[in-house]
Image (cartoon, rainbow, N blue to C red; front, side):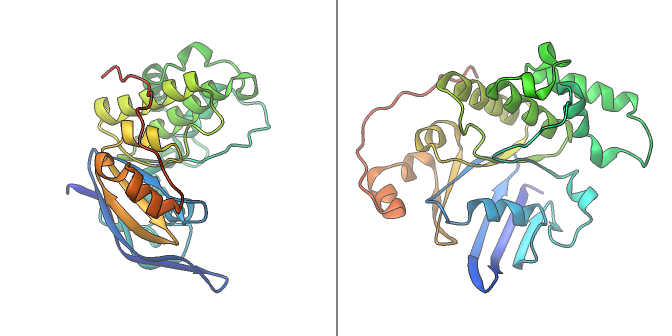
Length: 253
């Protein structure tokens, strides 16, 4: 099956307020899709529907499985999630946090198996986080922590990773590092990425496809070169845009 994510007429109403309306689109295996749109468009809520967190109307399927009804552990072997913010207050090493990504495969009260350890070692090498494996999360910089969160998602060994604004609050260097890492995971690991992105230049530079949401609906979708342009962006955000050359980090791929 080439289509890993399939949404058909997805709708969601919370406390009597329509949040998502008649959303239909698909994401193919190996895609790198950015979701853009103004605040309140329903972007994060859409990701949460794919995680089975809401009793939506219509259909949202991952690998042919309906997200709101499939067993959570089974769904967690298909899709992993890097949220916008993390509140980790308890002392936990980077290695132990990445190991937590193996939870869909753990048996009750059973310790991590050799394969789990091998997976964690591999993803920490891929993400460049092995050098600070023994440090607690609270001692890491924002960019280092974000790489650890991505490593934990990668440790789930899912074909799809959802990310909610993966470079929020990071400086330019760490934004570049994280976005280069995500492209590496997409290309070299074959992982399908669906990410919310408020940085339009970044979305244009890294994505293979863009979905624009507005007022809980799909406003437009297509290639970055077609959508990241002054006229469609002005209609989406209801504000003027200028078309100028911008700087973006250079991909090593």
